[in-house]
Image (cartoon, rainbow, N blue to C red; front, side, top):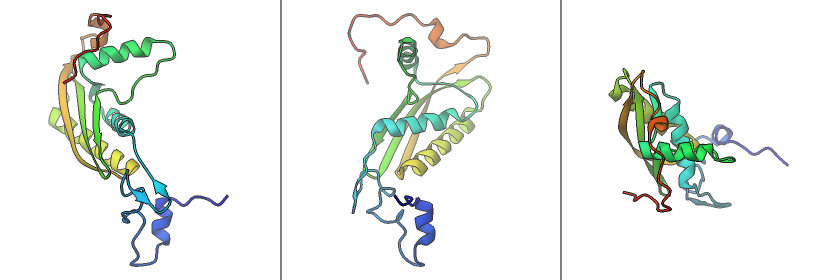
Amino acid sequence: MPDTPTPATLHKNAPHGAPTPAASPASPAAAAGSVGERGRTALAVGVVEKIAGMAAREINGIHALGSGLARTFGAMRDRVPGGRGSVGRGIKAEVGEKQTAIDIALVVEYGVVIPELARQVRENIIDAVERMTGLEVVEVNIAVNDVHLPDEPDVVEEEEEVPSSGQRPKLK
């Protein structure tokens, strides 16, 4: 079976003046939901959320992702045998055919300059999502929900247990 060409090699081998596959509307790299000559590529919302979560975690100064409730549920899920941690915790994405919008909730470490941290997180998420998915990131909204103090225990440890009433919490 011949080697599958990468977008970089296709771009290098394209004749001068010819449209490159990445610029072609029929290219899977051009749009997540695009239909090309050989098929359609669709990205699940969770894919974009995981990429954004990993990109955000690469920035120093972030203590945790998500609101207190999301972190509590996540910690419970992590303790269940066979359960896996959610990389996309604290991230909500809306994914269209060519564009995506991302909301992220953060808990920052005490002492970081929040506007600078937000700029770094935003840039890193945009770079990672656009590079890996081919989607245009139209906005990254960042909500700083808390500041983690150095002498403060982790929020998950000090919160009460979630009631087991069997009812789901109301979503906003």
